[in-house]
Length: 476
Image 1 (cartoon, one colour):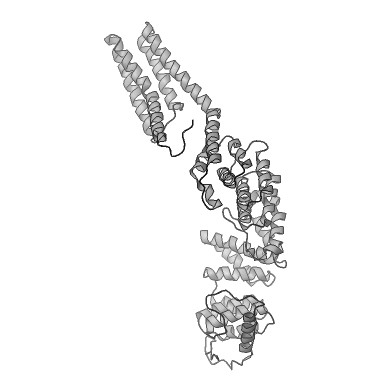
Image 2 (spheres, rainbow, N blue to C red):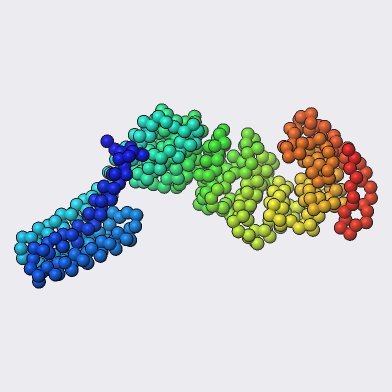
């Protein structure tokens, strides 16, 4: 019966295996040394010299492989070939003992070749993988959370043993217990080597299983499959009802847009335009940056109506933000500032650019003051006014804030009220540090009324100040 993981017998087994490997490594030197005592001095000395050379070679092989070594490795085979040649040269094969020594060397060498062939065939690996799969199927103690099932000890062992063939893990996908399927898929995550029909079976599981954790695991297992049909099918999960599955699909689809964007472009657009996912935010990008082709398409989509335009702009902002965090790209910053000042650029994208540049401290006062002009979108004027008032009193920013507050838009009125309350200290009924109230709530209506009354007040002529600032009188 295979040894169970964590069994007290396993350390003893590892010690025995290490002892066997060490014996195989030292056998040629020991054989030459033992045989040397049978011969007279004129043969004994060359045999002992050969034993010393082989011993030094064994020490060198062992030192080069500090943690472990395989008997079938090339250095070990070379030691046995040297031993066989040394026996023939020193003895001239003149007596039965020389033939016996040569036979022993050749016999062990053939055994090494046989073991190596058996190992390379994958039979032993498949046997170990099936034993681990059986233990997973019979396991009764599982973590409370399904996602934690990916970290049980058997998963790591199974991943190591199915490098050549995923069949033992795939067999577990028919198991009635969800935890077993999640663990098996975790062992298959980001797998690169598949046999014919295996990716299609995993895709079938992703498309039919009702459990989100199973669907997410199946999607991550297919992340490295280089087949257009499979990748396109995985991209459809960007609109899955489960956020866990959508996150897995985004990770599996967007990691290589340089080669796969044409395969997933339509699915990405449909996901960004889905009204049910309007509040989802940007698509997550967790590895390689987006390709230039993907960036160009997202810039085009940002000009569309919401939710497509807004989510495309948010995805671009996330992409550019990750690039700026990894390294300060002067050309990227210049291109972002150019688009920010370009009136033809979509408003949603300009707002995201302004927020990103502000976050990285790349918006100077002259640029912010230029964004206060009535020709710019209200959301952009509001952002610029907020940034300028954060630095201190500013008459033009205050005037822009009043202009935006007069707009007949409750959502914009609530955001304006938040800026007024934070920057000017005027209590408009919002709770500090809390999300804005729902648009159709009584509190939202009351805050909207208050901020419009504030906007209707005559602030008075600005007092002389070279910086263009004026004192503010707040009425409560």
